[in-house]
Image 1 (cartoon, helix red, strand yellow):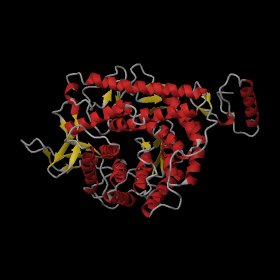
Image 2 (cartoon, one colour):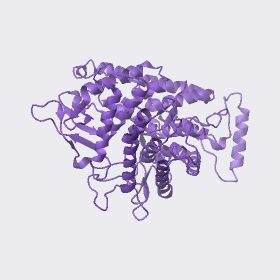
Image 3 (cartoon, one colour):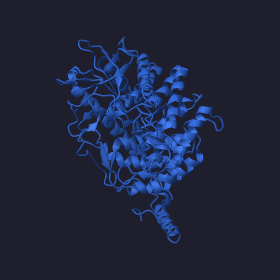
Image 4 (cartoon, one colour):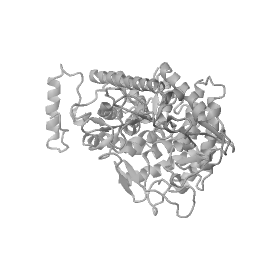
Length: 560
């Protein structure tokens, strides 16, 4: 009875529910909590229960714009979101991603977990799309639960944490609907084996059905982002379990908190060890290689030091974990400040054309500097500006956090303005200095393989934060240009497909524009959300001194 969800047929469900309720009543002295079993959420194969948040009032922890009070730009962003969402509902409902050109769907990991739907929940809430949110909520409470229970295959722990766990927790923070908290608990507990390691370094992947965490053969190590960018979501989950759960949930919250702390200590220990090696001793204490071994608990010395793919969100979360702790956890403050000093001293370069960029150190060798900058690095202006708004500064006189943020934002915007479509490519490169010249680099270049655009959010994220911090109208103007370019080149009408499509080549505006059959979940979850927030006039909507946005733009309240 307890291992099989009650059937939906009218003839058996009342009996099943009645019998289960009697069993609950009979065993009440042994159970901390008890609830109508017809709604049970399956948390794992070995433990099945319904989360007991009986006393939790359904009220939002966040503030959103009042209905009917959107400005013109926000209304257009809201309309674009409805266009994307309606395409997903019509052609890919319940799937991980929409295929906009073929009007089909795609599963990202295993048998699928409706990634786009879960990732977009709090965007729908924020923009006041309540009818769409209600349908998505109903899907989570019924079909998503079944998909989790029946899931087959492996999933990346980092992506599942920031998009699924983060999306559900963000939806709970916005709506106060405990369905989302219960779903977050269900998937969060499923992923805990990835944190239960001998070294404390989390595994990169997990079989959600069997509970086996592992590293895939083609990627035997966890990336820095994978190992260091899941703690924020699990910390928020642990806090909610401790505040609102029954006895079992409180115990689980304590375990989650302990596992998170172990992972933080493991990465800090690995960092200390790395910086005592021949290679690491030459690297600034705040910078780390992009790969770490789960089995040895040590960084892979030969791996690249980057703020781009596989490294980015680790540095972002140093600041955000400090802020989420109510500025009480000094470990993250010191690690963040050291990281920014390391960036200034060893990764920042300037060009003869007035641009500042962040490069990479190959193999930990400072003489092997690569003038390559991913669009992903464009998260950094926003992170630096956010830290500045909280009074954080560098001890290095040549490293002003806000000034570096402004310079890097100019470079990120140049990545847009230098293309035919007005949208950034995935990666840019800078010409090496002329012979004998060691300081100034040359022009920005875009290689053939890097000319595509996934409509990433990092630049508009930084524009939003810079607008909140500086109130410079320029940032809104630049964001509006980006939105117009997205609407012009990525939006599909019914004749061409549905929703929005990634772009094949931003360097040509030939008609028809080359597009990819892919709409990333982060397009609705992040890109459109940050554009909407950029044009919001009321600072009570997700105030940056009261919430932390995870790396997928899901807002978590900072608890006192």
